[in-house]
Amino acid sequence: MKARRFVFGLIAAGVLLTLASCSKDPVFDGDLIVGKWVSGTEYYRYDADSKGVTWDTGDDVQEEEGQPFTWSFDSETNRLTLVHQMEMGAVVPKAYTLTALNDSTMEYKDNYGQKFKYKRVVI
Image (cartoon, rainbow, N blue to C red):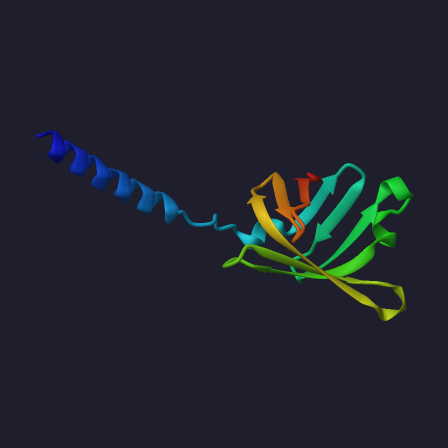
């Protein structure tokens, strides 16, 4: 009887471990990215046409003076890619992995583990 319980316990533990290891990454609705986001004095505006602009009021830069970028989102990998268009024609791509996205919060991390958290600006 004890052997049966032991075997049953091992099987149950194996099933639980298998199910736990099959956890999937969250799936985010990329349409929620569109809008204006803020973290401290740093702002990002993501437009529906995959363009955007970023500015930092702490550096006395306003929205109309901001740096333009294009953006894309891959929902299979949760990868958010920004391509900043610098002065003199240079482009700087930056890739992030979304870790949270809802109506009010967007969080992501870069390839080095640095985390970023933004709140939606409600107009």
